[in-house]
Amino acid sequence: MKTKITLLSLVTLLTACGGTVPELKSSVDQGQTGLGTTLPDTPTTPTSPNIDSVDMKSRVDDSSNKMGFNNALALDIDKTRGEFVIMLPMPSGVVFTPSGTFTQYPDISFTPVFDGTGKMKMAVRVPIKYVLRGITTVPATRLPNGDPLPAMPAGQNELPSLALSFPSNNNTKINLYIGLSAFGLFMTLPDNAALPLPINITLPIKNADKSKTYGYLTYVNAKNGYQPGLFLSGVVPPEFARILEDHFGL
Image 1 (tube, rainbow, N blue to C red):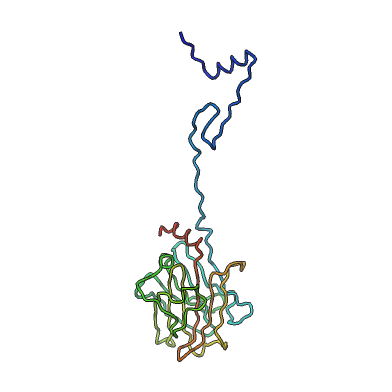
Image 2 (image 1 turned 90 degrees about the vertical axis):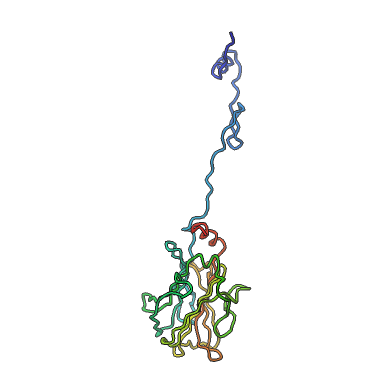
């Protein structure tokens, strides 16, 4: 009759004979043990950046008080609604009350908001999908006066533009520019709200610790009969774009 030798009996036999018990080594990384038994690979959970790591909340850096907008909140992301929030600060004395949506894109909305000091901003909410995918159904254009879009990345001086006019509000015009991971917002100012600046001035829009610049605010002087205005530009960093695309399933 054959005798079945188990691992326990083998160890007992070797010990009794003064032998050495072989060390049972295992290598989980290789999926093997010293006994030649294959173990399943240890499952790993891929780690990807969380939506909470995306923070584009940034403010105008106007410490020298060139425009009077220092520390004004200009860019943010509404992660619940999936929207970029573009906030264009207005000079003191400018009041603009209309709110609504852009005709061609009713999910892009605009409204005036006021900060703690009573200063007005024009806030535009743009669904993230439009900025990350771009809009191609409207023609690319420049500023109303024909100038290239200021403080935009190379090759993006002309972007598709949605325009609104408000004749009853000092002939105010709003132009929203949307390109691939880039956007801009231009709003005309009444002549009596023109800033006393001899040339166009551009200020950076930075995060809380001022280590990163996410956009720029440019004052555009009156030109060839066109009203002065303010232009705010922003670019979504590629690493943020990837996280937002994954999170919102774009």
